[in-house]
Length: 219
Length: 149
Image (cartoon, rainbow over all chains, first blue to last red; front, side):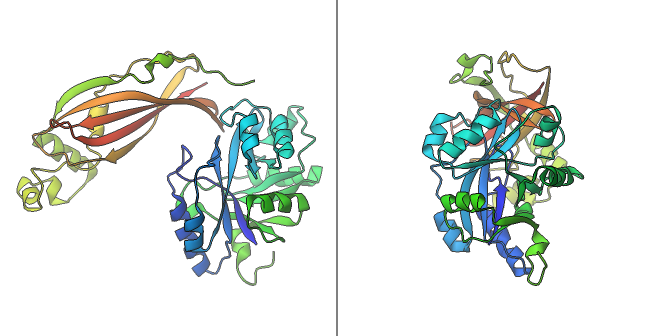
């Protein structure tokens, strides 16, 4: 199934898209022959435990999961399967947190943290690794990011090749029509955030562009 | 290593008042022209009255005209050297018509850091509520400033 693993709604300070606008746009994408089964809302520096999108998800037949995108000293990290204990252990608004501690804490609490847009110039994991930092717990990175500039996804791809990392895909949408531009194709059927964490651990997935979800596309 | 921001937190909860500001026909028409708006209710008083408004209607974002006249206090943020305007959000709450007088009440809403391609920035967010001469809320305007390293 195809999930957009990185998106921001109006709950983030820099997005103007509502969740319903995303779900409506996905209907447009489907009419154009694309397959988009779900999205993960990864709001900046927060986790919206109190927000329930289940009615909208049912209305539009789109899986809507919740995660976070956290700022760290070593770039942005996507966190999936966020649990209440994790939100209590870490200050999600802390932009100077150590990404290595985040990854360990996420793992400890049954969640999964991975670097977002690692090829992004100035703030991606590649830059920090070139400065001599090491991240032994990284095994998966966001390989395709819909907000990347020229060369940034290529840097992420090179990073995966050099270190044997697996890659995910996400649009990083902040605007309605950007949703679904990049996705992750999972072998497993995912219904909950915990399913998503298990699917990441399984390694049975790959990043794709939207056009790769067209029927007959070779992915 | 939490990033602790130093600024005047005593500003939270304090309201800073400005105005009253006169809403004139000329000001509404000039603002409407700047938007290239052609709806007659924003241009012609007779059209506005015929449409059921109490006078010449101001466009929904009209209060942004007065935001620049609101003097906000320095929060004494100990970070960065350059501040840039980072955006406005306007939530219209009621009609504003020519002849109204509006007052502004502003408070510090949030101060938070974020990181991006251009490094670490601190966002300072102010929220201003505009009321008319009857005390009715007519608009909320949220204004953000980004302070760069």
